[in-house]
Each structure stands twice: as C-alpha cells, then as structure tokens.
Image (cartoon, rainbow, N blue to C red):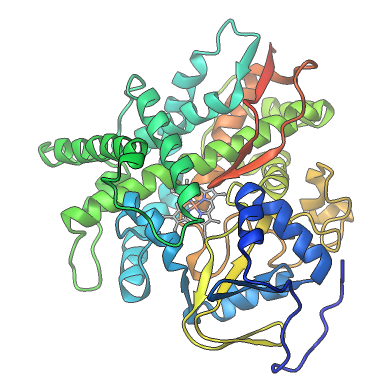
Length: 452
Ligand code: HEM
C-alpha cells in the first residue's frame, strides 16, 4: 500500500478505478470490506470511484478522517439514501435528522447520556445482566452471540423503559434481525420500493411489531403518574432552548433509535470481545484476575469500572479488530470541500471505514494480532494517532451512547469473568467478520463455558 500522503494540487483527481461501477457495486454488496480494502491496497489512501452518476471518495488516513468528521462536519450530511433506509424504522430521530433539527435533538438528548447519568444506570445494568446470565447455569457451551443479544436487549429494556419482560425479547430480537438484513439489501438499490410491496412482508411485519412495542411502552408510561428515572423518563423531561419538549412522534422516534442503536451494536461488540477472550486464554486469565481482585464476589458498581484498566483495554482492542459500525454511514458534501489536498465537489459521496483504518500497520503494529497493551500509554507502544481508532465515529456526530456502551460492556464482562472462563470449542472454526449493518460473525459463535 502507498504509505505516503503526498500533497497534490487541488486540481488533480485522486486515483481510482474507471467505469460506472456496476461490477464494483455487486462486489461490495457481496463483500464490502474486502472489495474496498482491495481498492485502497491498489490505489492508496484516497480512492475516487464512480457509481453511475455519483462520484465517491473513500478515505483511510486518520488525518483525512479528522478533516472530514471534525474540521468539515458542517459541509456534510449523511447520505440521503442511507438515512432513507434508516428512516423507515427510526423516523426523524437524532440518527437521521440534519442541520438545526439534529442540533436541537442532540442537545435535548445529550444530558441523558452524560457520564454522570450513565453511572446512575449501573444498578439497572447489573440487574438486567444478572437475570440474563442466570440462564447460563449448568451450561457447558453457549451460543454467545445470541446470549449477548439477549443480555444487551435486557439492559436497554431496563434502562430505557424499566422493563424486565424477557418473554417478548425473542420476537423482538427476530424483528430487529429481519430489519437489519432487509436494510442491508436496500442500501444497494437506488430507491426503496414502498412498504406495501409483496416482497417486503418480512420488513413490514418486523416494523409493525417494533412499532407496537415502543408505542405501548410510551402509552403505558404516559398513563402512569409515578415518574421513573430511566431514559424514557429523561426524554419526557428533555427541553430545548425554547423550553419545548419532544413531540409524541419525536418521542417514538428517539425511543426506537435508542432501543435499536442501544443494543445491536453493543451485542456485536460483546460478542467479538467474548471471541477475543476465548481465543486468548492467557490474556483472559489476567483480566479475570483483575476483575476478581477488584470485585471479589460483589457485583460491579460505577466506581469499580475505572479500577479495571486491563478490562477496558480489552474492549478497545476488540473494538479495533471488530468495530460493530465497520463502515460509518456514508456522507454527502453539501459544498465543495478540501480533504487530503484534493477538492471534492458539492454532491460527492464520502466513505470512511473504521474496519480498514483499524487494521493499518502504519498505526497498529501487527494489526491482525489481539494486543490490548497497545492502548497502555506506559507500555512503550507507539502512540496511536488521533483518528486511527474510531469505533464510535468522531466529531459532533460521534456516537451519543459511547459512554453508555463502554459502561455496559464493563458490567456485563465483569459479571461473566467473575463466574466463567470462556473457551474456544476445538471443533468450531474461527469466525469471520461479516457486515450486516453491524459487523457479526459469519456463523453462530458457540463458546465453551467453564465455571470458575
Ligand atoms: C459498542 C457499541 C456502539 C458502537 C460501536 C456505536 C457506534 C456508533 C457510531 C460509529 C456512530 C456514528 C455513525 C456515523 O458517524 O456515521 C454512532 C451513532 C449513534 N449511536 Fe452508537 N454505538 C454503540 C452504542 C450505542 C448505544 C448504547 C447507544 C444508545 C443507547 C447509541 C446511540 C447512538 C446514536 C443516537 C447515534 C447517532 C448520533 C448522531 O447522529 O448525533 N450507540 N454509534
């Protein structure tokens, strides 16, 4: 790969493949990361390509990533086709909105996700995770991905709605899965067929089930006189600069986004973390020692989490190797923009791919290896440049729930390591990452459980 960033005149065009891109689009729909990785290996840090009428720029270098997400964020919007696919479930939530509407929603929601607020959710996270892990008793092997989906769903139900109804969890998990699979297919079509189209029955059913679930939670809460200190309670209290609250529709949309974004990505992150632990038993043993020396038999509190830096580094490394949002939502320039010395015309697509930047040997020595100590600044490992590690994105549209996610991961992982050693099953092949909106193992990930 070309490792130099060469200053070029803004007039010249970045390298890239020729043609209208039908074959590349097909290849990307089959293997997004492999196809894009091969283009960068061939053409360098910046790849320009055409997809019929769209000109598309893909950036790898951390400096370019920050030029896009931080320095130029106000000259970009999320690619409308991508947000249109999301909007069918998320409505006009903070994930989808742009401009002044986005700013208002983000400011209204931000306090509910502040570190102090998230700390107050730790007892709820513990309660939900413990209930979910209770089902592991007596098992010697587990479908770890399914177990993490169930656990993170229990956590978000408890923190968002104060709900502990595991029964409806399975139907909802299926609906979420169906929505992801259908959404991923739609990204590669120029327009979406209306929801009533006969071949959309799966998506229609999934959306109807999720809508009914969210609307029932809100209806029941509005009918209840006793205030609750969960995320829905905080959303009901949220006010904008004009002292206005969220509309009924706005409340539904934000709940849907918090519910979906709040458990799918964290489930993927914990799944890959579990795999990293099972595949690196010595590192797992060191982390488990740290957990037990801090907690002994107690459940974790918010104050315990900063006392377990080895555990925190294992999350960073798992998120580096397997970032759940492997490709950020594509952006479109709303005005001309200069990145890496090239001028991008208004209307261009901009693509950033954490999964590729995270495995670049320029920033991460032996990038394929699981080395949590690379995040220990005192270990002699070279400093990681800003923009090279971005599982939560960067800039003003950075993940709203990053602190929530890392706290939840700390709680769930500590509870697991207090009780179990995760083991690789010799008869099962190592999982390969597959991009399905989030990055997931290509086959169900089964792990062995040894009670400690
Ligand atoms: C490990 C878990 C998670 C990962 C890896 C993750 C990753 C991301 C990324 C990369 C973005 C930015 C996408 C872009 O710039 O295109 C994002 C946005 C967002 N995330 Fe997360 N996320 C996680 C967990 C959560 C949780 C737990 C919540 C809420 C409870 C959440 C809520 C959101 C919201 C609302 C946005 C949109 C923010 C905006 O556009 O202003 N995420 N997430």
